[in-house]
Amino acid sequence: MRCSVILAAVACFLGPYDWPSSAFGDEPKAVDSSSKDSSTNVVLFLIDDLGWCDLACYGSDYYRTPNIDRLAKGGMKFTDAYAACNVCSPTRAAILSGKYPARLLLTQWLPSGRWDAQKYRMREARYLSNLPLEEVTIAEAMREAGYRTAFMGKWHLGTETYYYPQHQGFDVNVAGRDYGAPGSYFYPFEGSWKIPTTGQVLRKENLLDGQAGDYLVDRLAEEAAEFIVENQDDPFFLMLSHYAVHAPLQGKAEKVKHYEQTGPSQRQGKPDYAAMVESVDESVGTVIQTLRRLGLEETTLVMFTSDNGGFAKATSNSPLRANKGSNYEGGIRVPLLIQWPGHVTGGTVCSTPVISTDLYPTILAATGLKPKPFQHLDGASLVPLLTGVGEFEREAIYWHYPHYNQHPQSFPSGVIRAGDWKLIENFESGELELFNLAEDLAESKNVADQNPTVTNALLGKLRRWRADVGADPMHVNQQYQGNLKSPK
Image (cartoon, rainbow, N blue to C red; front, side, top):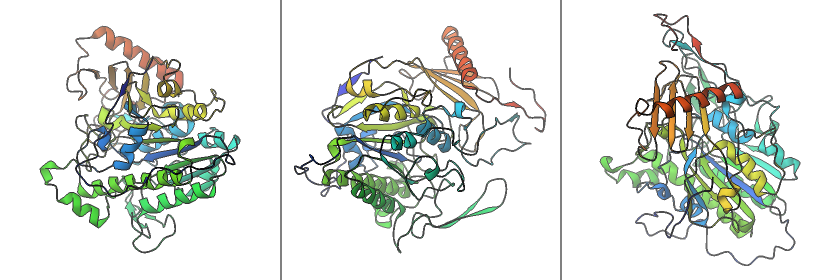
């Protein structure tokens, strides 16, 4: 399949503001790069809970994101990009491993603790509590090739003793811990969290140094810029994985005040959330300006994406249905921007469906490294889509979520998207939902009964895929009050 590409005269909407000089700075000065390594550097921005519609270049007229929008203007915007799961940890594992969460047996956020033996008719599938060390992560692949590797921000893929970023190929780990959110976004970044269903309280400790008034998003950007400066003469792979814009919703006061000036009925999300989005945007500007100042922007592959859809209590995902935690589009469709100077025409738009697992082989291909097909089994290099050279072939993409959570419109389910068709199989009830996303992006009309041939074909593919990857199934929950039968 070749990507349908649209040359965009205006890639993004920058809003009606008279912006000061952005963090990108003026045009880059000529730099003598003769003494620099010619290898392609890689910067991967992974934002937590950022919705598909939460950027100006994806249609928002509420959130201010000029720096991120410039990535779209300078690279390719994917309209049909997906997270590998509707919650965070599995998607992060898929990015690092190039494998579907179902193949990894890591299909739930860590630690879950939301299942209730008396409340739910199905027993959840098993899942691992860490990313296995046997996986050759993208960081390990890059380090093997001589890259300096750094992870900064939210990890959420295992415990401290054995499963932190430094155990998975990263030379540097800044603020990567086992939990999925900070105690606070303001220094000293500490706080408490009552663990669901247990009643116990987790004390979240200081993530990194700082001083009174420091904001976590800014501090991570500063650390990222410092890493780039220190490694400017060597190839590097930097993964800046922000805790933002995950709860607790805490924005800088002056930014919150700005968004509060918009009437409640005109807001896309809560003012605190909007302020956090803007701070994330500024952090992107800080990193890109550092690359530009050092003459590295033209030799750096930059990727920007999210780990799942937007949180229902923070933002609106309209026109998509539902939110984080759901397998409707609002829970799994995410922004994806890739800037690769000299290879990607700026302002292009790609509508080919792609997924988190694709980032691993894409990074290898873009940096001239050999693929590791034994590892990134479920990913496909996006280079043909980015450059227009070669064919991108894949019949379908898949999801397996055999769990419950407390997000709206969430239920245990399996999903397949093939072309414009999307089928959802409800594991609890057995119900099938079929949508043609080209005609019904909002997934408002289930057309499964009207299209039995398509429905049966997709269901067969989905079930064969589950068998192929060894997806762990759900079973009847004998403790459920009522002891209802398992759906056929």
